[in-house]
Length: 375
Image 1 (cartoon, rainbow, N blue to C red):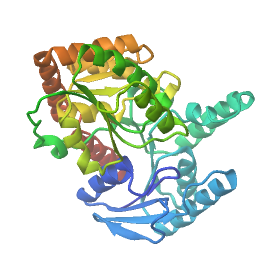
Image 2 (cartoon, rainbow, N blue to C red; image 1 turned 45 degrees about the vertical axis):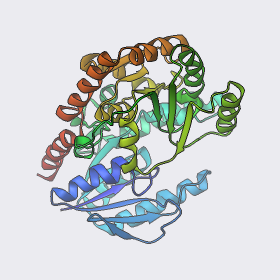
Image 3 (cartoon, rainbow, N blue to C red; image 1 turned 180 degrees about the vertical axis):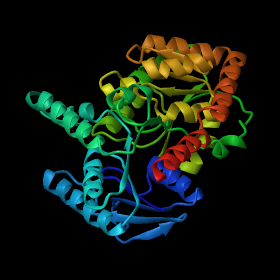
């Protein structure tokens, strides 16, 4: 049976779309193709890990270009002659719905986020209610054609209660971390991994670091990731110079996925401070939470509904108000000052990933979904 992954907004080798779902399906015996916007480097179809990757025109700003991507997805999706179309956004879902009408194919909708909120937040204020309403209605209508809906977190289930549904978290593969050993060394290291932006709390983190350093003089902050917004890098560099933090802030830049685990394991605390400015942040379960847990380090993380629930149930760290530098300072200092407590939290988080929050468990769910759809 052939499966075609359709995405209008993710790169061809996206972590969830390609490395997790597509490769897992190949391992189950499916013939899998991924059709996605080019990352700008590759323009022709190629094979990777048993998956056929078919790039379309790269992502750019503007509705005309977006419509071109949608047309490319439909044209190449139609030509793939797949039996199942696995769609990752409202636009690709509508393509799947049209292909179902034309060919009677089966459709799976993979919901990565609350699309009405994320789409409307990008619009001018007077248009946001209209944008929310139209995206909501269009997505719900198209979802009626699906054989199954997959969601990345619990709160998204409510929107698709009338469809067969499964929760498949964005979690790392356990085998990737199973042999990881935390090196013995001296020092107190905080790690931040991911895109460096205002809404992911870089300002709060650096303000907290100043106070942490006054209490834990040998503390260091390691930032693993890219600057993703205009002005952030300049502000960070000026803040570091102004407060004499050059020796305690390390910036690695972007690293390949397989180089990140050891960077996390070398730390004493993992920090993720999503700010409560987007609805999707407030309901999310970010990858970084589970990556920190898999690396065996305790977390200091935003106390939102889903995140806080996981952290409290597993005992893997301290949820905090991400807008309050004082709360962040208190949590970090507590973990750095009580290494045995921090070690136990890290071990509990690692065990929870091994037993529950790893891709191997999600792969079992994905297999059940496809077994059902393929009947």
